Length: 142
Image 1: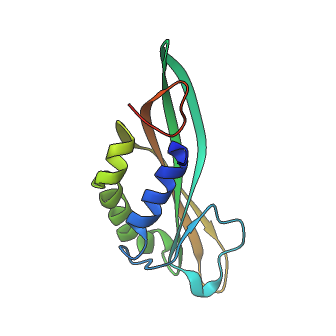
Image 2: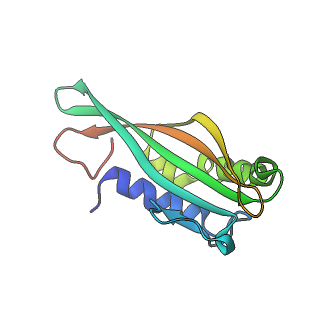
């Protein structure tokens, strides 16, 4: 079985792929540049996880997942907005994700624009997820 962050990523990919205006252009931890024909698209990645002792046999974990929406056109942020709304609805309403984490919240959002043949940009939303886990097992939640 996979770790909880890995399970979260699999569920998020499944929830978002084909269910927004980005269609099948949902990427995980994308390291290569986004091609002109791949926008709009969504890129998701785990960016941080902190753990603290809840009790002698349980840890409380806080996982941050970054979701980027890449668009091309003017204004890029207006084009990204309906996709961002769909992402938020799909993630917060996903039963599989809610079975893995106790709390799921939007933590922050930022916008970045780039000059290209059409204005290109992306909106980054960071989601914070908290869950309890046995201290001796990275694959299950409590």
